Length: 171
Image 1 (cartoon, rainbow, N blue to C red):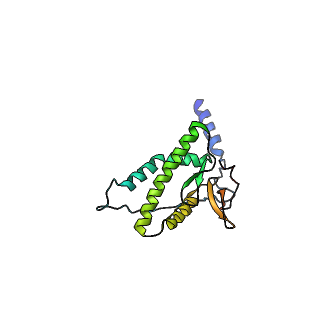
Image 2: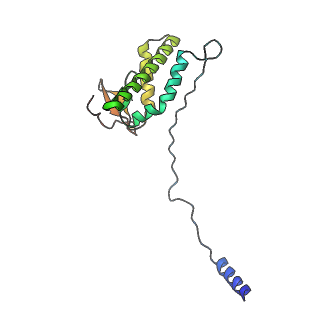
């Protein structure tokens, strides 16, 4: 008896042929934006632990904190390739933020001076190049200083390349 029920159940299940559609009505769209920077590190003659290496190490150590400040819209990239406070918080945290931004800028300046000396170009040229690089690397919504109609203004980087909003009152 159980054998007959099993055969009947299997024949009923075999007769069921559900249609499963795995296609989408429109093709999938993948939007990828990527930047690759290739660096050649000096070997041999250059000291491995020179001031430039130490500045790079310090910058790497504070990279996450700098990104948090930019994500919180507290700091932004200025026209000289340095970090600027857009809206300074008050109290002890504000002091910490100022010290962090000053330390980051000191290391950026040291590296820019080294780059200017190596390439034998004016510091202003290196600052302009670094500022453009940092503006390009900024995520949508981060504050960047851009030139609009001949004047420099703080604006949030828009996702489409346009500018979004004006900054809060300067501290």
